[in-house]
Length: 299
Image (tube, rainbow, N blue to C red; front, side):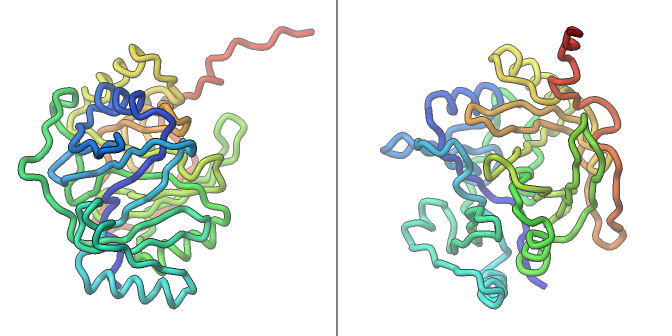
């Protein structure tokens, strides 16, 4: 079955382009590939021309998840499955495809109302981006920009949609209690990256977090230091996940949802991979602020 091959791009509608430009370039180490006449930003992190589209507006949320397929035949096959499942699919115009720097795209929503685009033929940059901040570079290219954890109103419905319609493959589950909160997450891959997509339940925004993976471990500590220096709220301290083996931390973007910055993610080989279930979020670390809150005085 032909399906999604990577998380190709994401778009955010944010209240302040100035704040987001400073955050993405100085803290995350991304580059500004282009600036549109209205000030919107097109950001890069590897050899793909564009990976993030940042526009100004009131939403302070993601406004598109761009999922790549191999070619026009794969696009046609997935669109046929979408329409067979009763999903309304809108073809993108030539102008819209040019803005995304892709050959062709279609737009639709997942069962939770998250805005998705499916495309093929992403344009490559004349020269790959080399970050002056994350000097070792990012794990990206054919594995996509990273991963995203999205809001899902109905987890079973979301699983059927992403696995049976879009062609994602199950990596594993995490089911546990984390500082008093129940956790039930499912992780899906589209290439060798352990997961490009994960979801549990509904979120306040369309996205819980997106993840960027550095090629060198020290880059995680350096980004952690940059975040602290910039006053970025740390949401989970340095730690390591049991399923994808990612060494990372979590912090808040200027729009309120989170980002994860990590290193050392596990690779999946479909010939030998067997999904399993884990019963902790992290083997160590990843403590939230509540873990360090002083105890409430007794009355």
